[in-house]
Amino acid sequence: MTAFQVFFLVTILALAPAILVMMTSFTRIIVVLGFLRQALATQQMPPNQVLVGLALFLTFFVMAPTWQQVNVDAFQPYMAQEITQAEAFDRALTPIREFMFRQTRERDLLLFVRLSEIERPNTLDDVPTHVLIPAFVISELRIAFEIGFMLYIPFLIIDMVVASTLMSMGMFMLPPIFISLPFKVIMFVLADGWNRLVGSLIMSFAR
Image (cartoon, rainbow, N blue to C red; front, side, top):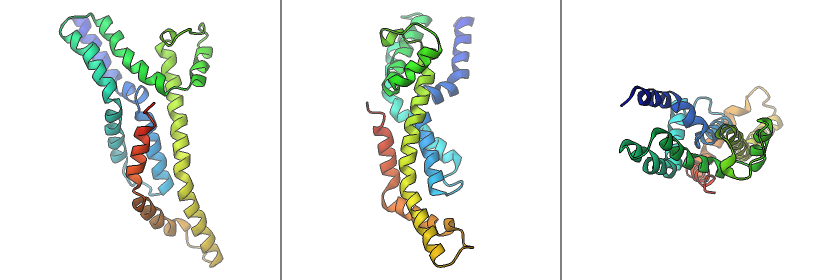
């Protein structure tokens, strides 16, 4: 392996965390899980390590077909010395770009095309990757916030009912969260919340 190849691999490894966070499904998943914890008002339960670990494994599940295509089309031929490093990079980027395009709103893409002051692309292949990535990220954040809003509604209703009940009973000194928290947790458990939430998250990428 040449010195340049070693440098290339080290660079890829250094950028791996950013690639994992910004070019995959990780952003949407971890933001939604964060919203869930805030809606439940369980403070540090589940712990950050658990949420990040779950988000990582869900990301691996969602991205598995894309990474499999990268492995077959780019990594394996490169390791067999059938293609050059530049060709391997282009082949690896193609399925990742396809995934990001499927999840990116046209409006967000047009925003960064306009901000980058490049000519309006005629095809998706004409869109530079440095334009696609931020458009993909803000599209992911928008969808995550939409899901987070829907998560908040049932828990907010419980908080309002508990707060109104305590006020009507004259129990102003008792924080409503102490009463509403058990109800929110049991409602989430009885509704099979984890199954429904994870299933909805995975299905949100199926387009």
